[in-house]
Image 1 (cartoon, rainbow, N blue to C red):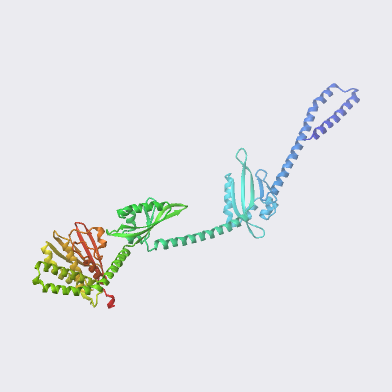
Image 2 (cartoon, rainbow, N blue to C red):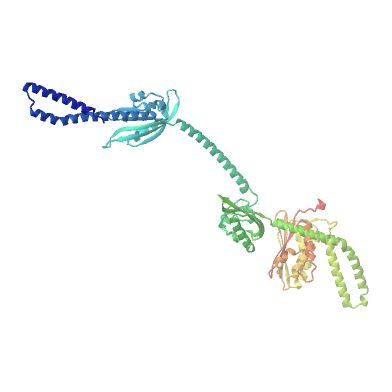
Length: 553
């Protein structure tokens, strides 16, 4: 702050004081002492007056400088800055308002509501909301569109801050309007791009879901989904066919209860290994809803999400029929081999046997009867084995005719009833009423059922009941069951029954069941054997109703 005002005031005071003193000296011839006292007293007020002048000038310069800086700030910021004083009704705007709105600053100064007049009609609700917020004394931010002089539309962001005095009265508002048109265009492009990406992602997600549905839902192989605790989460529709349970029933059951006990350790070990990220394949037996055992081929695959295993897929396949088919093929191959052997040697053996039997009978008068009976018995036994060999060879000229299976079974039970009665065994027949005729060679079927019922009689040394059941399974198959109450057969020996020369009887040849299997196979049927020790054995023969042998096709 300079001393200009104080110096000028002192100089004026000195000149005025000197003039008064000169005048008094001329008039009075001397200067009164009180004038000197007054002059000395007035020095400070004069100095103070000059000081106030210097301060006023200084503060005016500072205010002018502040105004210049503020104007410079207003004009250099790339936005429209404005301030409205409610007391003076004065609006101050930056020159940049013309860049933002396209109109000169004077138009806004002359009409303080001009900014509302350029807002497009669709966004007036936004502007009205801003005014309501200002009346409540709230700071507000809004984005709306304005109409430029050239007819184009531009996006504006308005920010307004209210200023209050100590009494809480709104005295001023400061605001800034920013051109956000480019940002909105970029946002629109981004939004469009994001929408396109969203549509693309949704499309890919839908395709992925469809692929999953094709793989999971429409897969002919049963697929089960388990969590890591071994709980069944979901399964595809094919899963209901493999074990006979509905998916809901499977979810309510303990999975371990479906697996045979001897396979549980293998299943548990594989489940643990797969939950650690490996994959495993195994073959195990599961219990069908009807109580039968099904051989299942099982593949376990881990479900990996974010490099962590969260569950396990189990893809299953029922290979019970395949194993049975393989067994039938294997047995058929053995039968074929034995048949070839039979065809080669049976006739060559039978001719000498006939000669031997004739000479034994001729010389019976010269030989001890005991020895003769032994010789004839053994020759008959050899002849029986040869006869069974011949049956195993490919039959020639067999004629298949439509026959009543109930009559065939009745004839057989009549023949064997006496033998059964002698051993304290009762033959019981249980036939369904509407059993259709079957296409067969009745003599061969008689031999099969004679062999099976004889086996049942021999397996019942303590007597009991043998039940012969016949029923229609469906429109294509008839079932005949021979159920005894004999000693039974060990489970591990059942798969070997029907193999050449394998027998459970002390004096058996192992060819009887083999012949039965061969005959039933030639009739397009199947024979199944189930047994429990000391409870009995059940042999089920299933024969197609309208079977046509290949030679008659």
